[in-house]
Image (cartoon, rainbow, N blue to C red; front, side, top):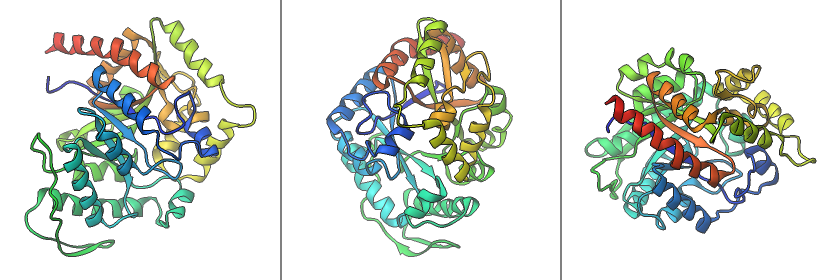
Length: 360
C-alpha cells in the first residue's frame, strides 16, 4: 500500500522507563546515559507492532544520536531509526562519512531528522551563535553538500557562505539493501525557512502538529514539489474516550512537588527562537482544538505533547483526517511509553490499515 500512513515512535532515552517528561529529565540529567538493552527490546517490540522507525533525539541531556543508533541497530533486525542531528556542529564530509559507516553496519536502516537549531542557550553551549534564519541558511548548505555526496558523481566541490569544499571524497559508500543511495531527510520546523529547505534539500517536512485544516492550508508548495508532510505529536488511545481523557489528565497531574515543569517550559519558550515551539505554546490557550486534539500537556511538557486523545476508533479517524489533509508520516510519543506504543500498534494501526484498504 504505497499511500499508507507511516508511523514512527520516539525512542525512550536512558532513565525514561517511567512516565517522565523531557523537561523533568533535562532538569535532572537523568537521560544522559544510554540504556541499550532496554532500548533494543523496545525497538524489537516496535518492529512487531508495525512501527517503522524510532526517533533518537539530539541534545545535551541525551546520548549521541548516531552512536546510540549504531549500538541499538546491531541488536535489531528490522527497526529503523530517525537520527536527529543539527547542522553547524560537524563538518558535512565527516558527517557523511560517519553515516555511511553506520549504513554499512545496520544496512542503511535510518533516516535523518535535521534540526537547524533549538534554544539559543543550548546552541551557544555547542558553540553555535547564529540567529534563527541564519541557521536555516547554513543547514541548507549543509544538506546540499550531504546530498552531493549521496546522490552526485565524483568529488564534491562546493563554495557557499558557510561551507567551502574542494575535491571532497568519502570512500565508504552509503549501503542499503533496498538500493537507496542516501537516507531519507526529514526537515524539522514550522517556519517558512524550514518549508523552503524541505523543497530544496529534504524528503519530508516534519512539523509540530496543529489541526488538519491548518496543516492543509500551508502544505501545497511542499506537496507540489513531491515531498511529504509529517507531524511530531503525542497520543493517548484507550478503549473509550472517557478512559483516554482520564489517562491524559492523570499524566498531566503527575509531577514531583519539587519541580515546576510548567514554569520551566514557559522559560524555555520565552528564551527560544523556534517558531514551532512558540506557535504550539500559543495554541494551548484553548484546551481542545478539535474534539480529539488536546493541548493539556503543552505548557508543562513542550510542543511535541500536543496530543490526539480518544478511543481507538477516535484516534484512527483523526489520523485519517490528517491523511486527507496531506499528512503521511507521524512521530509519536506516549505514556506510559511502552504501554502506549503497544496499545497504538495493537488497536489503532489495524483500524487505520483496514480503512486504507477499504478506500483503495
